[in-house]
Length: 127
Image 1: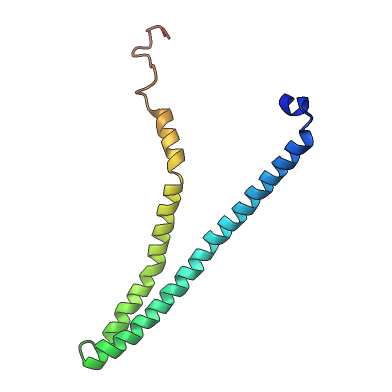
Image 2: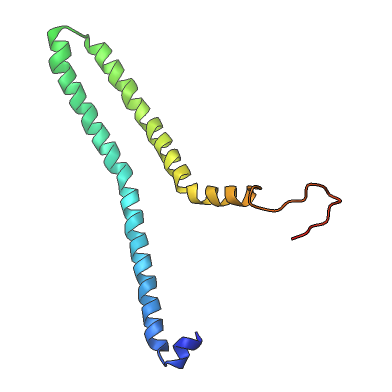
């Protein structure tokens, strides 16, 4: 702060700080918006694909007699029921991956290889 006061640029630095803060808020808003919109888009796409699979399956497999309609619908129903579980699993993996930096910091903190430790409680610390 002394450098800023010495050159009489406090107002300039204040405006620059406020602009940087506003930019961070705006980027955070857009990042959260993009993350929030992914799930509804994924569910809409999954539903569209499921309907397409039903139509194609009925037209190709059921019309040819290769498969019964009940078997096809049962398979697709089970497949569609698995989608939320898979999405939940992907969300958990994403959360864990987001914590990798913190986990690495904790691992480095708890690692004993690069830190001096006393081998005996009666030994004097020499560092």
